Length: 233
Image 1 (spheres, helix red, strand yellow):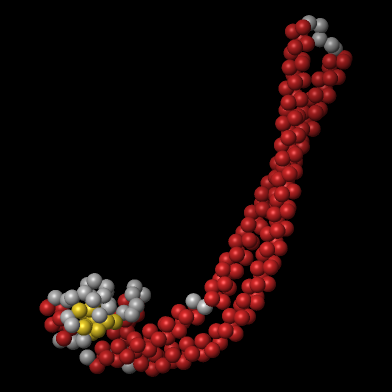
Image 2 (cartoon, one colour):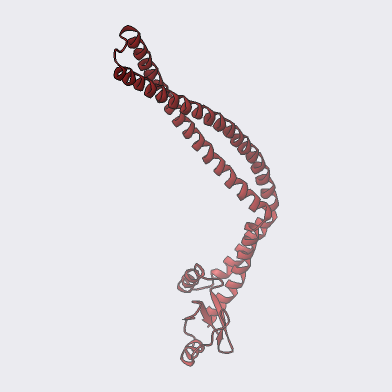
């Protein structure tokens, strides 16, 4: 029973330390700091994606330019063939005109795609500059917020260290096996220890059967079947 009381006293100080740590994490400055950090990471990722897209467009433009040169060469050959050896029949004229038309349409499609790539590249360049500027401004804001947060949290960290030390003094008085069980339950639910109050677990207010009540009153270590906390008298 003395060990349970030692555990209860330790939990009280441990919960105070956790409350201070939680308050530090919930600091508006810290939240702004984390939000700004996430923005920087997002813009860095976006910047790399733009770089990748731009490189792909440059490669595509090179391929289309080569294909365009080839099609223009084909059109020149058709014209030279027409001048050197004009078609003699209407069917031959239609056939050659069809080739010329197909070649011109291919050239037109290539030129349209090159123009599209040029416009998209220009838009990407503009977006990239905007992203880089936003990331640079966010970095400045991050550095300032970090300095503000470090200054703001100094006193809280001092308070937290003092409270952790106070909890540690009581922790050393608890049996290792009991402390291990405490920490295991704490990973699931906090606080991990509850009092028996009017036949109920004070953690979840669940009424306990008489057999369980007898075990608790007899000094046995019992976990609540509803919330999983250790119940002590």
